[in-house]
Image 1 (cartoon, rainbow, N blue to C red):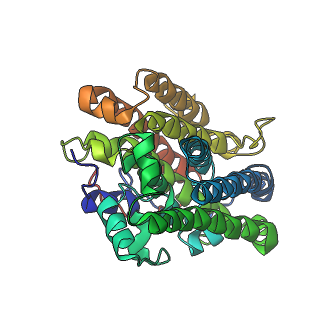
Image 2: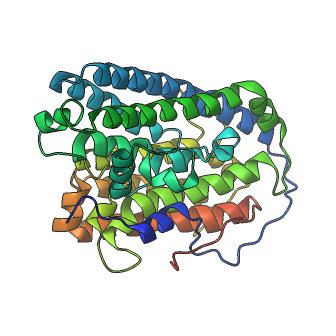
Length: 373
């Protein structure tokens, strides 16, 4: 299959809001006395801000490696830049969840990770030497998917890729486009991180109300949406054809460096579980999280603590992931049943999080399903 094929419907599926089994969910103001402020403080100070602080250092390094490569394109420089790209893509999985504040304002996730990439559109813009990455129509022509293509997908060998940045008739434009993509990743990350360090952190922690505009309600919807739409569907369900019956290997994340795809999935999965448990970004300890809130409310399902059921399902998901190939393109093409099994295990926690947890916390689902799942 051509690596330049476009999948507009899949892009729509990945970027649109969705929900699955809780169409009739309702929620309202809670009257419990759980310390939401302490939980919000833990999320902000020990998880979200440190995540963005670390990631900004990674994106700064990525920009520097990009500039070094475009100044003197060599195979050794390409190898170093690829390493920075991979570190960046993995690091992004630790912050992609937090689409709130400045991240929401700048459409952070869409700018950095809309895939499949429109490779044909990238080539057209390079040929014309005309592009504007700030336009929403350019979401699928930038970010980490664009770096993936520009560093791995434009030719078969490293020497041929380097030629695109040295002797190709559009070499200068290729270099400019590569620089533009890396600079934008770093610039947007700086904007989001700065927003948290400035007034948004205090506003977030102080917004302890239990209405739909409260910080807990908002980030909980963001959390469940991210898990359902971007982890379950984007990384597994859509490439596996879980919604259509037709597997689409070209929809795999990091399509041009597919050996990275499983690590991206596992990192995002770990981020969602850590956030559920209020685990600090450095892994040193757990603070107040959803697990504590559910235990405080004595939330039981089938005779077991709901928090234990959710964490137990995360364990099952990770155990199932052990059978998956590191290369998800190969996995979809050669043994898609295991990908579908991964989707099924992920779906179990969609129900527990979206139906049981959100009902227990009296939080209404505020996004709309488009997958029909």
